[in-house]
Length: 113
Length: 113
Image (tube, rainbow over the protein chains, first blue to last red):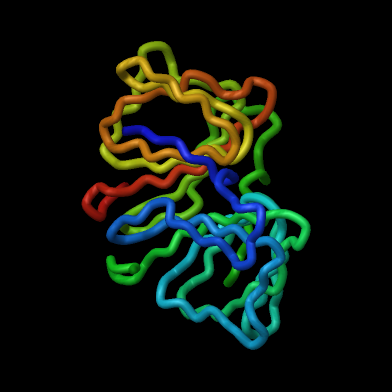
């Protein structure tokens, strides 16, 4: 019944795209692992999410840009809450190694699918 | 509005007890940081929780014992779901450095205080 997984396991050698995997889903939130290796948001693309997102950078490094011009650079251990509809984009992830994120999505009135 | 904190910051040099800090609380779950330095559960003590707990070992190392005799050793990146009322205890945390955990408590019918 008790099953241990590791955030740094099962990462393909080649990552043509960001890898998003669900770790846990309940009726009110879900936890995802996101693995990047140099991927960034496409030019002009902005996330504008229906749900709140708490994000932790576990390994690697990245920068998130926010509408209005602010950019936040993240190192391992850094975490922040991105409220719904706060427009943001991934400006940079480490091109040399994996960047591993933990994301918790929540807050769509008990339905965050 | 956007505020970045770091899981490895603000850890006192001396840790006479385990340090538990709330990172995020909603109506249905809460996220905690737990920092240990050699602390273990007292002899004979078992956690028997009313809520489900998803736990991630971010840094350091630890062992969790479960009733029935199973012990699980954890290294950084390891994560597992401990369902409510699964009795467990902390058998070991690294005595030499900090062990940093992320814990997500949830599932008490929308009220996990």
